[in-house]
Image (tube, rainbow, N blue to C red; front, side, top):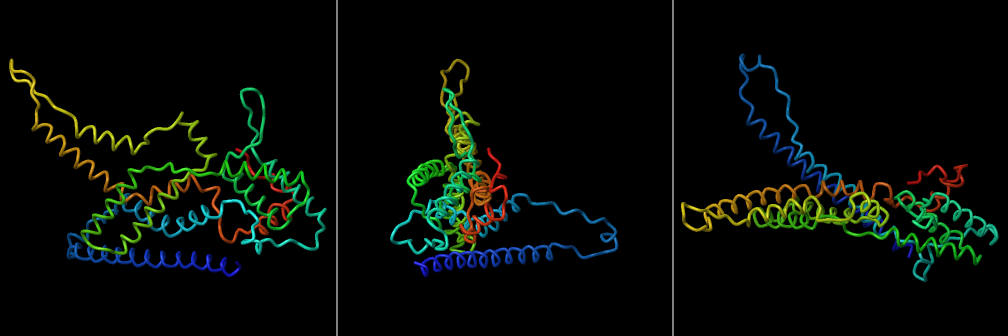
Length: 347
């Protein structure tokens, strides 16, 4: 099992290295192409042109957003999101992972029970107190920092302390069930964006074949999908803020384009009855399809960038990293922190 863990981490680092190499090659090629085009476009310097002040270069925000999406999103954030989705489940002791349980033999069972109770008390102290309509109060997870603290605290207890006290075990089960419920993730992204991105990839593949851009674009689609998974506690806040759900901004735009392109037109000439204006309907339909195609292309290119935005809203405070071990967590929040984690901000 130890070799299996090392192999998983090695594959993760290999994935990052491959993505970094492809991104560097892709954007180096784009930079060279842009430089060559600029050299061809530069006029021959003369006395009249050299005297003119140099114009400021305009920033292409669309290109900037696309570059941020593919470089930051696919290269840096995608491995983090994939790792977080895999590791944010609570550690459950089994025969297969028992090698990860390393109990400090210098501590007595009473001391391990005491430390486990200390961690559970700290978990309870950082949770948000909620009150229902009847005046009943309870502790709950309402943000990513709390969820991350609960997960690492429970994992530390199960991997390093292994308490035996019945009351402590009951509290561990209660917090574990609560964490599993509150940290469940649901896809809240736009299916239209994924459809547009896939369509763009298919069209470009048929046009220019399989290129490095298609390879990175495919990972951009994956990144958008996984980064759009929202935890229960975040989804609950979002539902309260927007008073329920809906088709979403992108869905509203796509639906409006479809309705506009399928609208029926009628014309009346003199005393003649109303007749269908097929010519106007054709023009309107073609115009709507052109606008829809342009919107689909833009959304296809911006898929990875929209994934970066989703990461900021869904993972920015709850992401996990391979080097964030339970031992470092305990050392940070308990051994080296006199307040023992009470500095965490509640929602």
